[in-house]
Image (tube, rainbow, N blue to C red; front, top):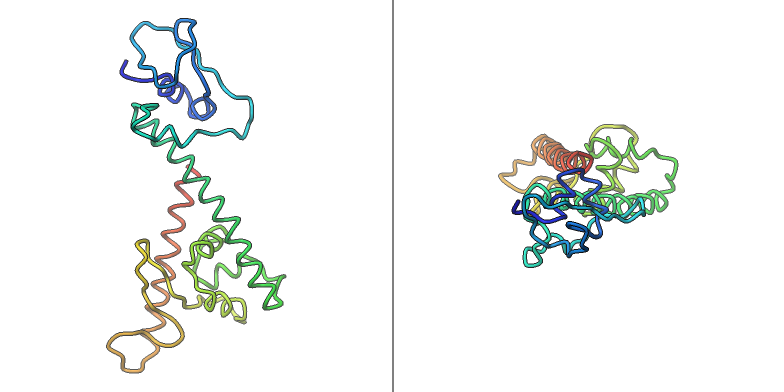
Length: 204
């Protein structure tokens, strides 16, 4: 078969794979990295904890827990979702502290996300946790009296800083603020799309 008991568990069902903690092959308890052969009977042993998930060791190619690229992708997806939930919790704390400093604790998160050109509160929290929204931009959005997008600095996926903001756009400057506004809106749009794609992949 060219696969392990863990591959077999993920082939049956993703949740079975996530909760797999052992296996019996032809009635004998075997390590999860055991290679299966045609005609063998496999019994998957699972943990009962409903919140249990896979181990990061399963992605270690030297351990050979998984031979199937599809099974490895399912494990990576689980951890990506876990990282996003962690960022959401961390980013929410950042936003709540900023709201408290400005005395605006009743401001809806969705409204604040809209002012920053982000699709929803989840994207807002993720962007705040990853510092894709600067503290100044966050404060300005909180203080704003309207729901139009607020310009902010976006940190690109590779750590490159595209500088946009209230102080003007660095470039062939003629002093015009129109170019600054358009560039800032575009940066906000790209940041929103990037975060939304990550959230969608984690929810898939």
